[in-house]
Amino acid sequence: MRVEVHGLAPGWHGLHLHAVGTCDGPGFTSAGSHIQHIHGDGTPHGLMNDDGPDAGDLPNLYVDEAGHGMAEFFTPHASLAEFGPGVSLLDADGSALVIHANPDDHSTQPIGGAERGSPAGSSRRNRTARCPPP
Image (tube, helix red, strand yellow):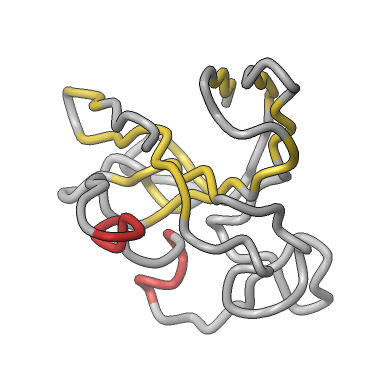
């Protein structure tokens, strides 16, 4: 996955895949929890958690002083396919890529201190919607 952003606050930002392809409400709570938590398997959050990561966990994104950031990530825990390994991002209600206000410490629960933030975009079968940063 390739992420490019413009107009965000400089610094590190947590980046997660959320279970629902909408970015409404205060803190974008309509995006739901991380994608894996919808299946109730109880895997804890955190790329550096000995019992994790959950499928929504991604590395932090760095945004420079001009508000630009770019990164490429690979995750075996999510998929654009309907079947096979990884949680499908294109299920009936889609999924959202959320850029959080603060960096993720990759270990504490529930989201590593990242707090809710800017929705980067959402995906639904046969269409992609962009959610503008606040």
